[in-house]
Image 1 (cartoon, helix red, strand yellow):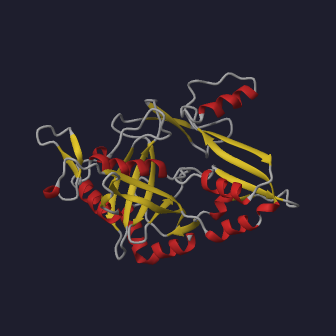
Image 2 (image 1 turned 180 degrees about the vertical axis):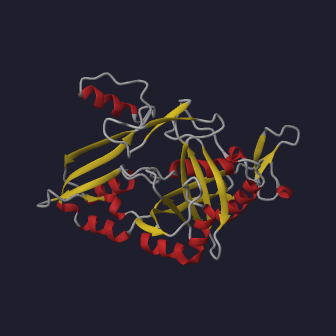
Image 3 (image 1 turned 90 degrees about the horizontal axis):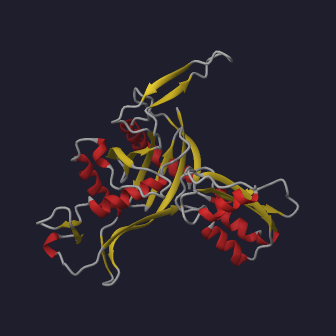
Length: 342
């Protein structure tokens, strides 16, 4: 049995849209079928990356190392590999069974053609308008690079892309049917999703708004992001320190303040302070009620997240086997996970 953390997202947008003309085509089912066909034609996993990360992105490349339909379900399983930052030629491994004072440390060379990172598993259900992220033993769930991955596929690798016949590097636009290609059209790909919230928990907070006495905010600050930089510099300044300009990894911040909220302000916090595409277990907003100073009501408690177990096989390297996972989900466990999470 393997423990799995399940997070549910609702697909907000998955289509090609011409705002000026008010026209659209495509949906999540069409994009998933298109993606499966494209991946099936690739020779290597290395060819499956669909985007180049920006300098201020808090994530690197993502690859798809397995994509398949889930048997008996109108759903797709995408197994992703998320690249992690490692500039060393080798890494050191510590044997945790070593006696104190006699540490057993070994060096492992990194193959230049290998990509350090972690796996992430996504179940896309177009008919239900949902995406399930299945996170096993890893801290991150890969949701941010996954969004960029699907959007990158729609932008440059989809069959809906129209390329110049004389210059195959020049993208002319997007069209559902090449026979109806209109050079004046302005279709753009859209792909967004957000965390599903359990209505009951959020409603309880709304009913208790007049009893809220303190708000606690947890957030990850990325020093390289322009919108995060002032917070990062201010925090260092309060400590009398000079910011480290080479710092790029995210930093966990927590701060709290006493407050009295109106219903309107609570709605603003619910809508804006909690990220719609989480990739961490840290970011959150907590509320402390009058006469309950020791109890924190976290907003994440209202998200469709749940821990469960799956009897899934692993590969020789210890990674979750995508084929086994798809078969298990197709044997009724996908519906069970949905019931538990929602």
